[in-house]
Image (cartoon, rainbow, N blue to C red; front, side):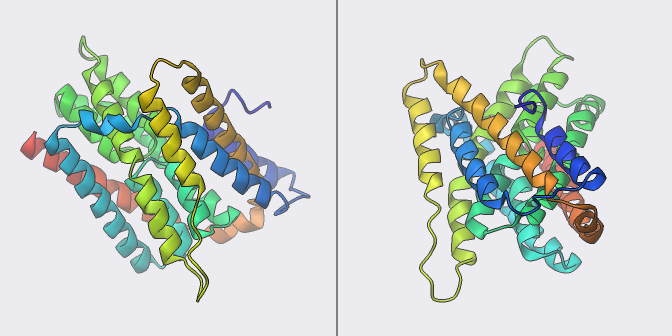
Length: 296
């Protein structure tokens, strides 16, 4: 696929650009294919994340992870209500902000039965903000003279996407002679990935329809199995290839999602979902930075 070499946000932007400029004669028909590909991609990405990563966290860092996930979920709900953002869209943006960007959104989307338009809005919002973090966080960290441990913790807590958080930490480490920020940010993001599991089941419960039985998102079981295999067979080099394939599958899914976001749908989005994501991101970024400065 020609998308195999590009980043996730570019894949989404290309899909949207195609829909806006040329239109999509198959709009909506790729829905089932996209949803299945998203699930498979999330499981494949799980092969790159060891469950044992959480054991490398200090007790205080673990508390910070849990506290700020809960704060993000609560604030996301409140801001979404105040701005009157469509419920599923708000929940997707909140999930991506609180956990790990696109991977969390893709996982949660299946359990809450989000459609492609809702996915596109949430992913676009998170990608823009995550890319902004990658640019501005190292400059802010250097200006405030954060230590490498402080910056790694801040990036892991506040930057949506795992790749962007690690990328920002790598950029910040250039001011020093060690890669401490990168290691801390990686551990924080990997530990946050584990919280996808309870969030997926919570979403399935909250969006349970009427008297129907709870729809169990079985793919998340395979996600856990993938992480378990990574932890127990760290010497197997094939896991990195599977994770890479999962990321590329996610990018192809994002392109397909983007092609279903026509000009009319884009015009109907409005500014409120983006404002929701922006306010939530600023609240988490500022509050976590203050807490890190006070306690680390």
